[in-house]
Amino acid sequence: MTLLDHHILALRLTSLTTFGLGFLVFASGPRRRLNQVFGLYSLSIAWWAIWESLVVSATSQENAGLFGRLQWLGVIFIAPTFAHTVFLFTEQRSKIKRAFLRIAYIASFFFLISHLLFNSLIRTMSPVAYTNFIIQATPLGASLAILFFILVNMGLWELGHSYLKASGQYRVRIKYLFWASLFGYLGGSPDWCLVFGFYIPVLSPFGIYAVPLYSIATTYAVLQHKLFDFNLVIRKSLVYSLLVTTLTVSYFGLVYTIEQIFKTTLGYKSFWISLSAFAMMALLFQPLKVGTQRLVDWLIFRAPQHELVRRLEKLEQEARKTEKLKAITTLAAGLCHELRNPLQTIRTHAEFLPERYDDPVFRKRCAEVMRTEIGRIDEFLKQLMEFAKPKQPTLRQVEPHKILDSTLDLLSNEFLKRRIRLDKQYQANGARLHADQDQFRQIILNLILNALEAIGRDGKILVKTNQENGWFTLEVSDTGSGIDPKILPKLFEPFTTTKPDGNGLGLSIVHSIVLEHRGKISVQSQPGQSTTFTVKLPVS
Image (cartoon, rainbow, N blue to C red; front, side, top):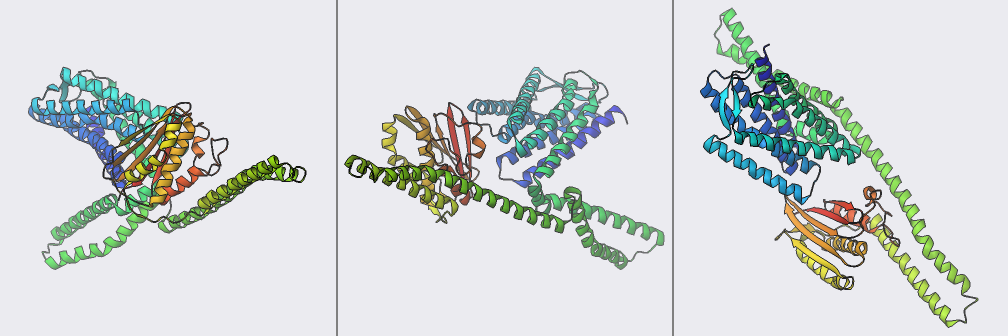
């Protein structure tokens, strides 16, 4: 094969693999913003690759110019969609990064309009090294290249930084995306050198093979670490349908070819014989389809379907047992710890009561202490019962902003007394939730009271709402002391608390309420600066 043949093959493999990867991820969650952006990112790469394969092999400058203009429609959006994918994947909420991403998209659309109307990115089409033609960029095209490298390096830096801080399964997923993306961009970057008239031996064209390898590595990560999502895609989405369709077309083609050979050799022209051959194919196709499904199961999951079901059921049973034992152990330890202090106080006063019974001051103090400590025990047991056996929510349509305002009004005296400023930023106007009103109010109360205690005095609490992609988002941020990073991963577990007199059940109850409403809750904190709790609930 010539160098040009390798260049064309690498580009076509890139187009095929990146399109397949993008389709796979998009089909697994078409309503998720991350899946949508990653799908566009993969489509941009596939679009660039297929049109460049036509450019480098074009036989006339006119055709090369047309293919080149189409090629750069993909090039323009590769870098911004990559950076956007990374920010969504690593859950970056920095206002500076958001603003930079908006500027990048605005610049990309400027390049797009300029390219479509004035062809201002392409100076000419000319042969470079082994290619028949390659795009030669204008100074404005050079500006696009600079933006491309800034965005790509920013995305890679963010992935690397998040990889160093991450742990568990999340760290594994970032590792695959980071190294695959780095390898792909290092391999594909020499293609930019051809655009500016430079040829780097070996790296052009063999470096482009790194891009389909990126797709293969990322696809492996999707299959290996998103197993059940992919199982849903392979069976119930177009991915499996495409596989069967390809097989069907190939099989029809094979039968038709064989039938034509027999017709030519034997000289028959009977329509019924041809129909019988296709009927036999139809009878054989169903077993072939089942066999293909089993083959896919075996290649991807290394086990047949019934074995996968059995393993899953066994793992679920073991997980339930483990979680149940862990919860019982935690509850028992927490119960002993929380009851010991008030009972010890009651016992001490009860022991001194006979000796100092005639002292009215002591009797009064003893009564107050016992009343207070028994109240503490009673409140703790109530919370424990709510955690151990939470009541079933009564779901109905509620307006979250009304509940927010009424709950915050109840706490207005606390804000004044502590000199804490409340900032409300409601961006989900008209939102409605299918929720239990009392339990939603309990979520708000717990988060606001936690914020008040974290600040103490003189600070600010921000209550922000938003509605996007079918989710209502509530954020409660405070300028308090923050949370110890060691405590953060287990903050929603029972009896985990940062307060000297806390029992660690409040956030556990909030967590269980959110899950009962099919929602999600997360926390971000900077020790000594701020804490933000984010609750996401599905809108009606």
